[in-house]
Amino acid sequence: MSKKEEGNWVVCRLVAEHYHELASPNSQKFLRSKRKKTDAQKNFIDLLDNSRVRSSKIASVLINQDGGVNQLNLTSQDIQNSLQTRRQKILKDKSRHTSLV
Image (cartoon, rainbow, N blue to C red):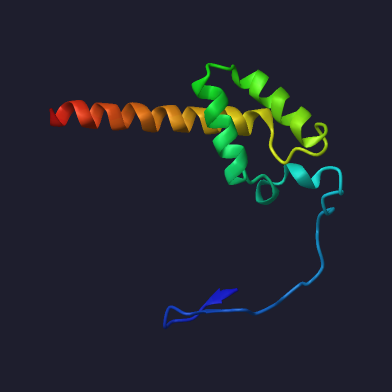
């Protein structure tokens, strides 16, 4: 690509072949685009977290529910990140509510 004087970009050359190996079928589930939580998974994770189940146990439950670790479209880190984000949002909402009172 090159930038013309008018500020527009122009494609000068296109190489249509890949310069890297594509993800194997076994490793595709680790690609960010494939690691999406369903609404049911989100609700179930929230339910277990509200019941004070540890995130490692939540991951174990989801693995068993989905038929094994190879079937689950999430990683343990995805679950921990989801719980951390949820807890931060709850704390932020609580602090906002108490500052209004």
